[in-house]
Image 1 (spheres, each protein chain N blue to C red):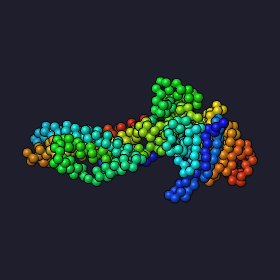
Image 2 (spheres, helix red, strand yellow; image 1 turned 135 degrees about the vertical axis):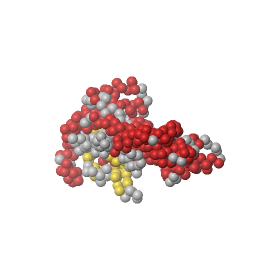
Image 3 (cartoon, rainbow over the protein chains, first blue to last red; image 1 turned 90 degrees about the horizontal axis):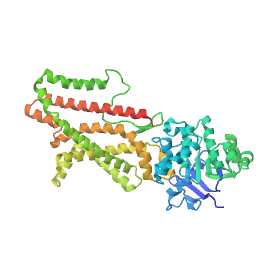
Image 4 (cartoon, rainbow over the protein chains, first blue to last red; image 1 turned 45 degrees about the vertical axis):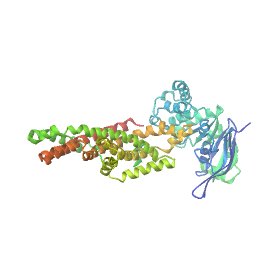
Length: 246
Length: 264
């Protein structure tokens, strides 16, 4: 089987002379339907790696593929690839001037030029899926953080992505709202969505992740099934980090 | 210019010119009320207390209000269009576009409006004859377009980066993201500062009297020149401007309040 997401020797350097390393020779393969959780201390490059997958960040070297399409090809049609890669942000980034349902409709009607009345039933189904049917006409400012994040997930799903990227989706949420977002993500994972999730939610990892990737200083230190990483990490750096967050 | 208030909603603070009514001041004798109704009261009282020359002045000068408004409204509309494109140019990633927009802003802001007026009417008038009203509108809108561009620029830049990223991540092009996501949010933000520019332009439009456009000031000058009633004529001129600008500044204040209440 072909990998859905293939990252080959990805490196990224910052600074005038490239003296700061964000990613160093990272390679990773995610098969269709797999869920990967990426953990690591802040500044370890996990968000940079995730954001490189839809080219919100550009790599200094290496390549990334979604199925047969090369994300990192500067002459490629990045917009077409982005349609197939949904992204959920830490700060939700809902469009504040649009209602929940309009947030979901924007991309299908703008990018795919679907007529509104054709896209609307799907948008409503997505809202129902994240449990927010009654909030259709609410503006983001009228929603709680957890509700906003669920709308943001529905918005990303509206483009029928093959892959979903989650960049610390619960970090900005109050504890009582984390579960409602994780439940939606679990539901997605069970549905067979390919997911890369930057998060330290161990419970989610144990319930849904095929692999946990531990990153530090721009490199993948260790990778394995959640039970093995959490209970029997082999690398000293992984053990030390897990001790901090457990 | 841009800052973020405690709700996390970006806002543009007003930095120039216009008189903005202090919304906190709800007292019956607020500065705005005293000035506004004082000016109206004086305009009503003076012709009663001394009909000559004030009644004559009040028959003669207000004819200029129409010209003042024509110049102001035409200029603000054109300046808005110029400003929108200048603002977009100032945040453009295309170097040449960015450079042209920035040079325009730098050059225009570096030349006094009065000099620009002379330049377009007299200097360029040597080559192309432009009617004075047209020249006035061109000069005013080109000048204010530069300032308006800076307002749009500040507005666009004050939208959090995540908005553009979210739009791009959904597959929108930069242009689509600008039209559908960034500009609609910017518009709400820039409305009050644009209102203030309108007031500033209304006042600056008095400069076009130099080109013999018969606006309020010009009418006042004409009256004074024939009757030598300088004090009385210019008192009325000043009061008319004051009433107009205070009226519009109140309007901007109300608009600002409404926009805040509507939330985002």
